[in-house]
Length: 284
Image (cartoon, rainbow, N blue to C red):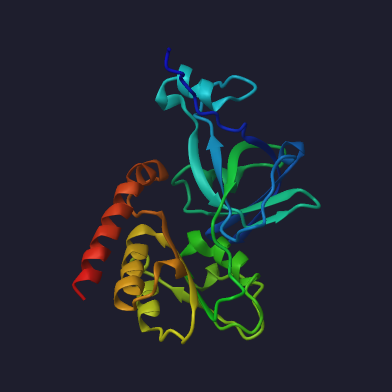
């Protein structure tokens, strides 16, 4: 009997329309998406929901209706849309509006310049959402830490932390002008770390290292630059001995790499970090 061949099918991407944009800080731009193309979209289970935006290569025309399988099968790789991953800052199911906050560093990259210049009425395709984390009601304390790239997820998480539960929140940004007003439970204070000319992540590692963790069962969310995350993962797993089921830790980006380069090596990077931790744990 001939072997049956199967082809993985991907769901059709959502087609969103830009409704409005807002400059939140010198380095962050908010884009609100909507339109009938979001009829199938839903989010809300997790506070780290993310979507994968598809940016067309300039000068390339894609078939309509858009079919990523057809694009990958029939077009050269350099013509494939560029994928950029962004956290869902908010989803309003009643108005069917999706809010995404973009870190902006001038003309560098693809998504930041797009967010800074896009006009209402423009369309963009995206896939998702994915996600896995949200603050649990059964935790005795929470630790949230990250740089600007993790700020949308940290902000969404702070709004969902049960009242009265101790929270330690650290956000590293370029300077005081990059702080945002956040919805936080009573008694919770966000510690903003202004890096200035320091390397990305240095202040974050110092702050978490100096933190005396509370007693009881914790829940930890640490995301941001990969090197920083690797250092904090080792600190929490090896030196502090926190069990892996307490932790949501991942590198959103890696210094010196665009998303294409980072994603292509992320699995290997994580496997190496896990192996190093296992060796360190075994020799404690």
